[in-house]
Every structure is written in structure tokens, then in C-alpha cells.
Image (tube, rainbow, N blue to C red; front, side, top):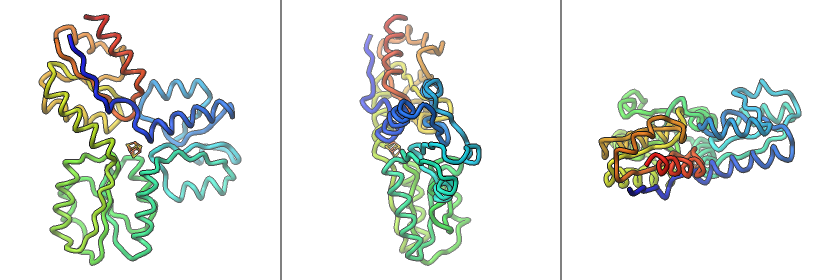
Length: 277
Ligand code: SF4
């Protein structure tokens, strides 16, 4: 039996920085609020809760003067302003790549551009980035381009974890509609590399295991990529999922995780496969 583990598996740089940061801060402070789940991963969230992290969906749920952490996805300017008004101690783990998107949106707005943000409308990163200018039009599907007005000055930018293939088609169509558009491809290399490696491994194995949280959109994307290349794919959150038992039927097994899964989960899955075998 052979197990091929994706080199891109495990937390991405931004998520690792945020999870390690929150873990350190709660150790020092005893209690720490975090705005939204730090990662779409139940195992990690449970562990941090046990250490004293309180996850809240809305800043209004937190009393004045508390410590509040911001996760890698980032938040809108309005949230920073609210936190300052409430005299909170903001511990900011917004990924530097997401911060770059915020500053580019602000700059484009100050220069009079109409802004198109390509991203999942309900994704926290998109919701945060949208809050850096008043005229941000969010689209997530190529068909939405025809509903956009005929702007003179247009600037587009994209959610860091958006599907690379889907983005390229949207960018081409935007360039057809707006001749002078400035398009910034801000998809994180970690997302693209992970999808490419997943495709490559899936084409070589009998059984492909995608690991990640149920609500993680980048994990779902990896599963779609894997299914296009390999007939036998499963998506699991950790080593306790019964679907892992199927690995006994196959000789070459591939493993790839989403950006919100720690390497320790991958290690436990490998251990479980070896036990099953
Ligand atoms: S995927 Fe990229 S941009 Fe998003 S948190 Fe990870 S490193 Fe940062």
C-alpha cells in the first residue's frame, strides 16, 4: 500500500498565524473573544474553546474593554470603529494578503473607480472586504456580469480563496465588457497550489481522501477537483469518520486537506489507515 500526502496539506500561512496567535493570547490572558470561528474546523474550535476562547458572531455580544481577536478572514472598517468605540483591545490576525485587498479597494475608491469584488457573497472575507468602499459590487458568477452597469472607470479584485479556473473566465468576460478595466488577481498562491496538487495526486491514486471542515468552502472545492480525476473520493473531517474504512479496498491512497485542517489531523488519519490495513 502507498499513501501520497499532499505537500500543500495542513494550515495555510494565514490560518496558522491566526490559530497560533489566538492560542498564545488566551494562554496569557485567560479569556479571549474571537469574532467568528477562527477556522472552519470543529476540532480546532473545540480545542480553543476549552482553553478559554469565546467565539461570537457579532461584536455587539461583547462587553466594553474586552480583548477581541480578529481572524485571518479580516473584517470591515465598521467593525474596527465599533471595537474602538467599545474601548476593546483588538488583537488582529487578519492575513496580510487579505489586508492588501482592503488597502487596494480603499485606494481604488479614493481614485474614483467603481469596484467589482469577485467572491462568495456569504463568505466572511468577502463581507469584510466589501466594507472598505461604498461602491463595491460583489459578483460570484459569470452570469452576473451582464447585470452590472456600464461603468467608465472600473477596478476588479478577487477573494483570496476563490476558484482559480472560475476566476479566469470571469476576468476574461469583464475585460470584454469594460475595455479599460484594471483587474487584480488576488487569489492566494496557497489556494491555487493546493488545487493543482490535489488534481495531480487524484489522477494517480485509486482512492482520494479530502480532509476538512464541513463548512469550509476551500475543502469543498478540493473535493470537486478530486472527483473530476478519481472515481473513489471521500471527504472527511477527521480520523473518526467511518468512510475511512473504505481505504482497505485500495492500494494507492491520496490525502489532501483544506487550509483549515492542521497537520496533526492528517497524521492521525495516516495512522488510522495503517491500522485498518
Ligand atoms: S488562504 Fe492565503 S490569503 Fe487566505 S488566510 Fe491563507 S495565506 Fe492568507
